[in-house]
Amino acid sequence: MIPAKPVVEPITNAVHLCIDMQNIFARGSIWETPWMERVLPAIVGICDRYTARTVFTRFITPLHAADRPGRWRRYFTKWESATRSRLPAGQLDLVPALARFAPPATVIDKPGYSAFVGSTLAAFLNEKGVDTVAMTGAETDVCVLASVLDAVDLGFRVVIVEDALCSSSDAGHDALMTMYRTRFAEQIELVRAEELPELWREAA
Image 1 (cartoon, rainbow, N blue to C red):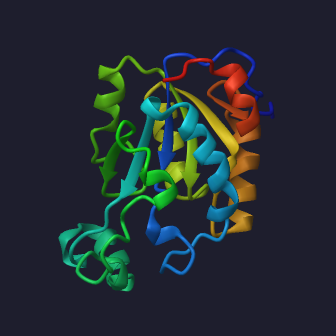
Image 2 (tube, rainbow, N blue to C red; image 1 turned 45 degrees about the vertical axis):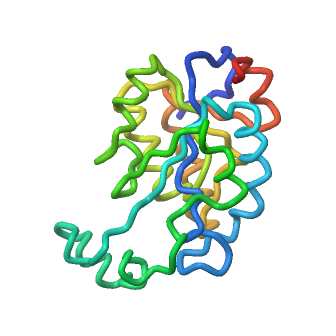
């Protein structure tokens, strides 16, 4: 197996795609992701540098479980407390440290795990001439995973900021980072947040 290569080519025609950094995943919420506080400073730094080139996604739950098809209905029956009819106000908003960047950062809502399914994201990126996504956010092994694989299938260059991802599962996070390094050498590259400005010199 060939390890995923570190980023060596300059990053151009890119956006910072930040997945689902919402209050519902913050400390004390029903889908708490403990690592969020640890990676938030790195994500804030990226947003501060590339504000106008940042796209935030938000996972928008249904009003009621019955509003979603198939196994999603079963999922939201179990997690009825996450439906919009039950959630406290503001739970689906971006966490305050990131909400201040939008606008000019763009916010795109999605109904499922992938940022590209049931959303306007692919059309937005194509309209802007974007061919590279630098990805951060939550969770490494759920919504980030689904978004990464769809970005690969759509032909985007995918740069993962490895110290700006978080998960509620250490085992899941570690397994995915291993997969990215060993199975997607030609399509996924890894970089640390402190290295990004040297590789991606475009700034708003």
